[in-house]
Length: 359
Image 1 (spheres, rainbow, N blue to C red):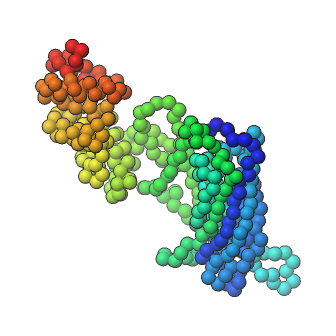
Image 2 (image 1 turned 180 degrees about the horizontal axis):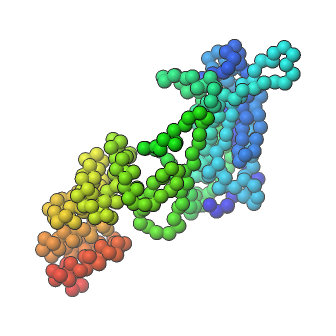
Image 3 (image 1 turned 90 degrees about the vertical axis):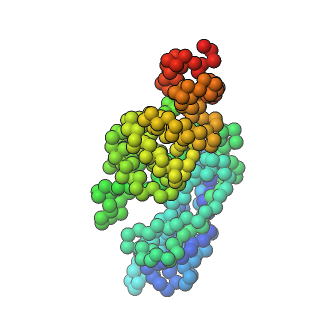
């Protein structure tokens, strides 16, 4: 990302309150918060007593400076979080010289909104327990302990124009299915990192999946992964799994499987893309079914060049000259990018002798 921000802009992190805290010592436990960013300790809060209800008023502010010319940059804000560690201070025992402490848990604060143009935002972040912490003992139905956090800068770090011209890409990993046994934590808590190479050029979608933490572009293995996953898809927000699998079937010319997959998608969450996937019917010479599906796709989005291209093919196959020419006209107007599909249309036009107004 372009480092367009001037140097010396302070970023403030304020923890106002803690809620539903559970400590090792039940009677008036004392806690403090440590803030860290970019592997640097920003500071410790004062030692605050937790109320019997589990709340604590920290009112703790720490900060760091954004300095693109050397130090912390916009890229750091985009992918490095602030860590807030809550620690309990244990009462001193007789003849004890040094103060003993035990870590309760840690919260993670994402700074990405600052890169997206926000000058301040406030959130309630969950406090994740460390192994052995009393926070681990929380049962279902009990509120998870949390911290109220506010992040602020004096003014937005980027202008509206800079945000529009930026190349920020945000990838969210929502869930993992069919997790290998090696991933199941036994003993100490384990963390896994997902890596993804982002192509700088090219417009064609490419299915990807992660195997044992490694990005793999093999279609056969990706297909097997999606086939295992598809049985879990019950929500429209997860429809991308079905679309990816259907796309693989189309590329591999497994048209019967593609047809069944896209029909499932149309039933659960009909859209232009799910109906377009039923071009599998056209490849199976089921022209009437293909035309019905393309008509549905066109009704939902009549600016999709690929839909018009297949409508042109259907009309050519059916011998309808006027409709074939009209669909072809829209295909060219919307600038179809699939050169192979365009070549297929031209070949069929030459075969039947119509469909191209330039003849």
